[in-house]
Length: 163
Image (cartoon, rainbow, N blue to C red):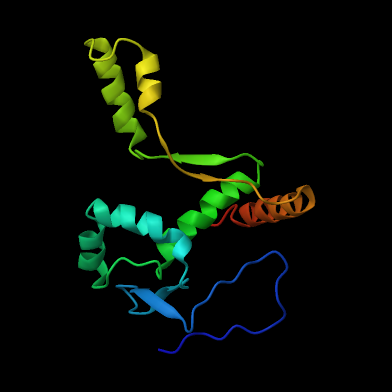
């Protein structure tokens, strides 16, 4: 099946990301048609995330599901990176990802450790916390406002999507 062509004028405020050709990784079981086109481009800004996922056994899980190695070429890590940057840009505040991403489990362990006296006070826990990566806002106010209005418009278009 050949990829659909996109014709017409560019849409203001919409970002299209593409590789050297369309990639269609998912098929519908009921129709055997492609469900979506993947966004693919080589971008080393996600190398750290890919390495982290690989170190947590993600390389094997990814290869089992796709037959391919985990790579900065795939869209998942890049979309994650874009969303983190978006979260920093719109409210214009830095967004920090902790070194230990399982914060719910870590919080439960900290509370239990405090309860049994493993740690004597919350200050000891604060010293354990480490930042892994921080996304800094980089949009000016006018550009930020324009993108936020576009985001709000996109959200309203999803209202009543399903009857």
